Image 1 (tube, rainbow, N blue to C red):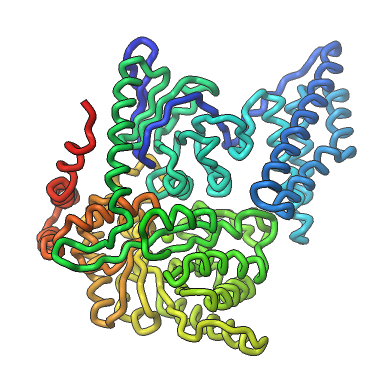
Image 2: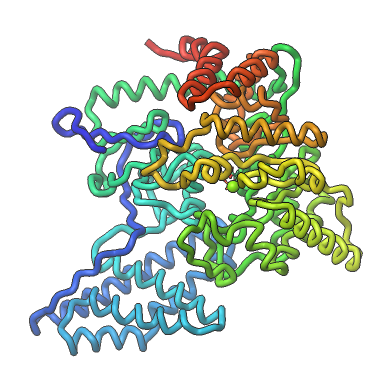
Length: 595
Ligand code: PEP
Ligand code: MG
C-alpha cells in the first residue's frame, strides 16, 4: 500500500473515513497481542532484571493514577474507581513475589516470567463463576498489559492519556477507547483496520477529527513522533511530508474552511427544497456532550441516540436512575424536538467490560447482538425501557429497537415495553402513554417482511450500515473487502424502495440513520426514493441542508426512478454523483477555491 514520494516522503492510500486535514507528530498505539521475548540471563544480570521490573511497576502506578485523575475530572468519581482496582493489582504482594522468585529460580527474563504468572492468575480468576471475581481477571489482564508495555518500552494503549496534541496511529481502536478521543488532544486518527462505518470512525467523524482507516499495515512504517499528514477527504497519509505537500494541503484546508463557512451560513435556515417541500434532517448522537453541536448544526432533533456508551463505561451496567438521568438531560435539553432513543445495541464491534456481557464469538456482527441480547436479559431490557419511559415526560421521546430480524422479536419487545409501563403505573410514575415505537430495519429479513412489521410499530428507521453489510455479505469493519461495501449496489436501492413502499402503504414514516444518510452524494437519492427523514452525525447536517435547499424534489424522484432501472453499482454512483455535482458540487468548488 505504501509508495515513495520524494526521498523522505512516503504516501499511503486508505479509506477516507472522516474529512479534514491534520499535520503533526504521530502517537503509535498498539492494541494487538504483545510479542513477549523469552530468553535466559546470566547470574550477574538477575538483580538488574528485578530492578527493571520495579521501575516498570512504578511507572505503571504513576500512569494509572494519572488516568484515574483525568477520568474523575472528565466523567465521575464512580467511573474513576475502576482504576483503584487496577492499583490493587500492582500492589498484590503475592503476585509480585512470585514473579521475582520465578526470575531468580529460572533465570528467564522478566517479561517472560511476568507474562507466565499473570496469565496463571488471569485464568484462575476467569474460571470462577462469581461475576465479581471474574471481573478481577479483566483488571489483571489490563494492568499486566500496561506493565509489559512499560517493560518493552512501548506506548501506553490508552488514548485518554495523551497530554499534547498528536495524531493517533493504531492497528484498530475499540469503541470504548474511541470514546476517550478528545478533539483538543487528538488531531487525527490513522488505522490499519476499519472502514467508514466502524464505530471508532463514526466517533472520529462526530467529534470532527480527520481520519483515514483501512491502511492494512501502516503501523509498521510509522514511529511515535514521526511527522505525518492525514488527509481525511481522500484517504491519504503522508509520512515526512515534503514542503510541496504541506503547501498543497495548506490550500486544501483553506478551501475546506471556506466550504464550511458557506454551509454554516445556511445552517439556521429551513430544510426546504426549491419546489417548496420541507424535509426533515435529524442528528445521530452518542451522549449529552453533543447537544451543543446539535443546536449549532440546524437539525430538528435526534433520529438516533446510541445508548451503548452508557453501558460500556465501567464494570457494571448503569441502573435505572443513572439511565433516567442521562436520557432526561438530553430529552429536556432538546424539547420540544424529538429524541429517538435506541435500546441497547451491544455486540458487533461494541463490547462492554461488564461480566453481564461475557461473549466471545466467531462472528460477532451476526451473533448475540442488540435486541437478541435484550430479549434474553429481560431485567437489563426492562430497566432500560422504564428509564426511557420516565424520561418521556420531560420532552418528546421516541423509542426504537435495533436489529429486529422477525415479527416475533418486535412483538416480544413490545410486550416487554407494556410490562415496563405497568411497572411504572404500579409505582405511580408518569410517562408518555402515546410514546412512538420504531423498528430499525437493518437486517435483510426485516426488510423483506417490512409490510408485516408495519402492523406493530409507528415508524421505521433504516440502519444502512448494517443493512448493507448483511445484504451484500460484506463485513462493515473488514478493510480487506471495503471496496465491496457499495451503497450504490442495485440490491441496496431496490431494498430501500421496498421498505419505503411498505411504510407508505401503512402510512408510517421512514427515516434513514446509517452513514449513507449523511453522505451528500446519496442524500438526494434517499429523499427521491420517498424517505421522510435523514439522521446523521451533527457535523454532516449543514452540508446536507445546503444541498436540500438547492434540490428540486421532482428531479430527485425522477433520478430515483432512473436509478431503479440500473444494473450496475458504478452506473448508479455516476448518476447520484452527477446530480450532486450539477446541483451544488461545481458551484461550491468555484466558490471555495483559493488561487
Ligand atoms: C446502522 O446499522 O446503520 C446503524 C445506524 O446502527 P449502528 O451503526 O449503531 O450499528
Ligand atoms: Mg446497526
